[in-house]
Amino acid sequence: MMSHNAHWPRVWPDTERLAAGLLILFAFSAWSLTGLANVALALLAALFVHDLPRHWPQLRRDPGLWLLFAVLLVTSLLALLAIWRFPATAIQQIDAIGSWNAPFLFVIIAWWLRADLRLMHQVLLAALLGLTLGILRKLDLSQLDAVLHGDRYDHAGTAILGLGFLISIAMLGLFLYRERLLTLSPWRWFGGLIWTLLILFFAALLLVMQARGAMFGLMLAGIAAVRVNAGHLPFRGRWRLPFVLLTLLLATTTLLWMSRERLTHDLNALVQTTEGASVRYDSSLGTRLNLYRVGLNVFAARPLIGWGPGSSATKLIIPARLLAVAPADLEQAPAWSHLHSIPLELLVRFGLVGAAIGVLLLILLIRAWRHLDTSRADPMLADFLRLIAILTLWFSVYDFRLVNLDLRFFLILFLGILYSFSLFAPDPAFPEAQPS
Image (tube, rainbow, N blue to C red; front, side, top):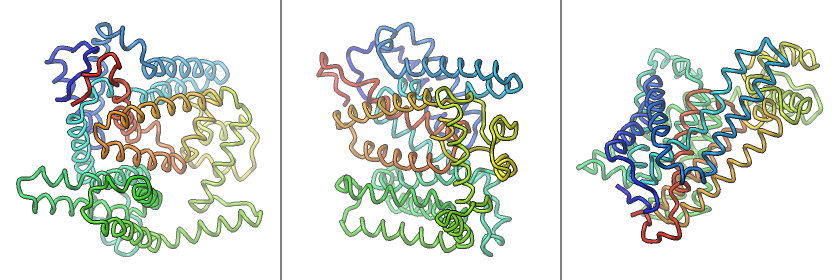
């Protein structure tokens, strides 16, 4: 167990062990048994609240905790204001308060992780196992014949974009932690076999789901890994670096070939845009271009504080004709559940106030990265978190699942791991309390 900083009073050992078990349980069940994950998260929150008075002298100086309180206050006030303006949306506004605040519970995860590298690795391994179990539980082999004939695999109703994003992160972790994972088995050949099967399984899922965004994200992460810090990558020979990139390029090319009809529709939509023609909603790219335009128009109509946390542009604002839009948008936009963009949804619902909160969060995370780099506790984990950030930023551009459990749990876990290094940064007054 990692040593604690001397200026942080220790909690009861039994409580600490219980919290560690709940962290592992939460990570394992987040994408396989979501009900159990919610229970584990609620218990961690209850333990945190119980622990809060004992550590308030230290926690009261933590900006992450105050950001959590500020987001809860701002979201609640904007929800009440939206209810006053649009009483019929009361249920949506109240429900959205919890959904938008849930990702900021990463402070609780960070608190119980204690910047403990061993516990973090256990949590990451539990997340990998849980995600794999969740996918296997919903595997639908009856679609095999349709997939072989070129149809897109539908993973038991699970959102393709969200699942593809999680799989891409799992594959990234498998590549980076390959050598460490192989040591988990007393027989290296057996560990290598399991590792190879997982890589092939996840890669096959990305292909049959035609998850182009996730595959492009992996390409971006691979290029960034080689350019930024190739020396930390766990490959014994320099020849393996171009081999990995070549493999990703081959997989991406294969995926594009499998989804060539959808790609043709997207290219046609792009050509229409460059020629000044009206873009239709009948392609993936065309839909996104239209939704982005609609989102910017909705934001421009109320730029300061937005329309309210529960005010969906496609499901509420456009259908209710709260804003004048083109006939095509009025007909087609309500068919989509969101704007396929986290930044746009943030601007629409919270305006510039939401953008300010996003900037504050970014500052906190950059500060946490600096603490992690300064401590040099685990360069590989630092690289892994950076590459995850690249995948997350890329994902946020083309999809919006912030209020869905899959992305919500991911953000709580990912941000919690990163922020733990800031929450438990060594105090200059206690240089001997560096993490072991």
